[in-house]
Image 1 (tube, one colour):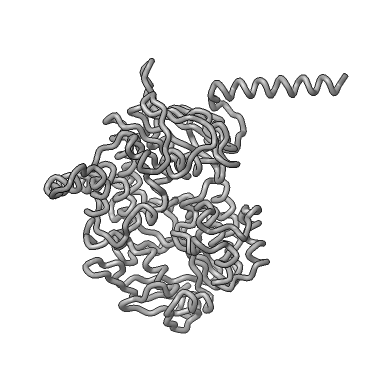
Image 2 (cartoon, helix red, strand yellow):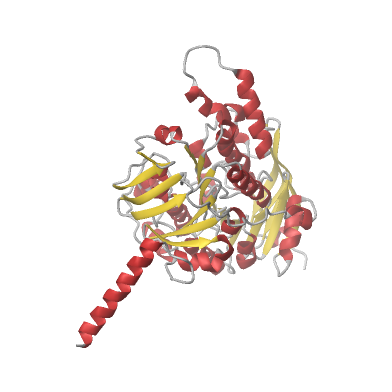
Length: 523
């Protein structure tokens, strides 16, 4: 059956947008039917986020038309788009950090009771509306953004990498809600790099490549290969060159850990966490939302101080009062939130060279030649697209994340702390980052990698630890670290994952105490 403009809920035609020399979109199109969940696919830099921002009035197109229910519409601002039924949840939380949640809701005229209803549906039941937005974890902010959008019942809900910052339990809730929205008179535009999510909830997929619409695919069994071909413009076999899984490096007997964590505690989230990270390995960290992983990485990066516990670097105790202390000790941090790590108005070169300025010991001219050489080497190593040399904000999300990693690679890395570094990044860039992490480990660096995508553990890590309730509850060899095993451990369902010795002893003691209590009750 031929679909006409009057049969469509939303239609964008011939949309283009340029930023100086960078072409973000060129004659892109999108047609969404009522009642469908429509995937918008493409590698980083393909133009997906730009198209969504144009549809919601955050960015004005150079050319093109947008029609809603057959009527052409010009949208001048997100507020106007919201009133017209077009609402987006963007990649980065759209809340003002220095306002509490309730004040943020007032700014968008969000009704409180529907908002609370959707929070419960999405699995966030204990939110205090008086909490400052900047103190709320990133994953919770994403859920708040989605609940706020759902509360106003939009005609078209656009989700830009909604699940990228979420652990498995919250991702499952989001996919359940999106699935329930299928049918009826409203639609969802769903952007994700996770093909398994596209297959689970989407009806059709529009694919962008280099700013152009290159195809529309019905999402059926086996359609993933066709989608990837369209996204990347090459044969699937050549493209899906994922790095070989880690071999599970054996730690030499008597080796000194690069990083030792003993009994680390902080607030109500982190309790007696202990583990060791060795030179030459990538250690994965797996946890559901709110299990203490944020606090752990903040302490290791020097932005928070533990209430109890001890840190050792190369066998020597250390104490960090500031991120600069952690950097001097050789611990560098790559955050999931690229906007926090980068100077968006500055160039790629300036962002990568930033750590070099801390090494200047006396007044005098900077060695620009040496700096340029190290920066160029880092850019080449990470294959950073620098067409937008003027400002980092002009780069795609994947290239921005590469810049955050490149600044440490350029200066030499001893210990890299990576917190969900591939969030919202396309499969090609993810593969490049996996290879980079493995190469860093092979050169003698130590890498601690928290990931919300469980499959990354076997792609990049030597072994994994699992955190539940602020404690390390399991250690899993890479060959056993498939998604079911990691998920069971993350929910603290004791499977065949090996527990650290101190926790195994505690588990035995708990079992003995329970047996004694039961026997006493019987008597």
